[in-house]
Image 1: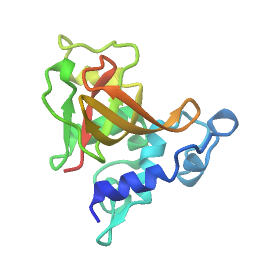
Image 2: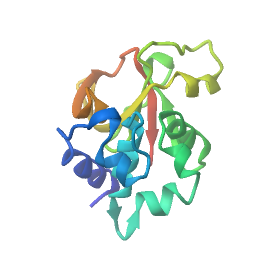
Image 3: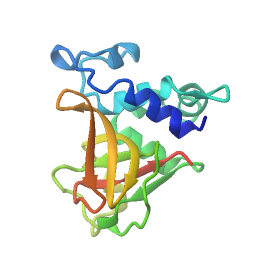
Length: 172
């Protein structure tokens, strides 16, 4: 099984799981990061529960290449993909990117559309407001699995040219 297939499989099993009071949920509890906004915590939790060919995404890649506590945030997720030489961050179409997202990629959102092409690329960190995982892309749409989407794990879809999509983090 490929890493992306396993990531999506783990995430799909969580669809419908809701948060408790004050963003209290099993994902934050498992990572000792409870009572905070949890979209990035969810994708981090998925990585912790993804093992392919005896390689655990969380233990063997994430915690070996950066601070876990900064990774479990939307800003930390983007920085991780930008700063690791073996990973890539791809700007979305409206920011000049021509990347087609793949299964298992992370997707980053700016709901307020505060970042634009004229801003320094480093400012993308401060614009990120939400993250999720790409389930697939087809017919000019991207399909996602996201934690903390309407206070639960949800499947969503967006046009690839949505102004709210900042870009994608790719593991491969």
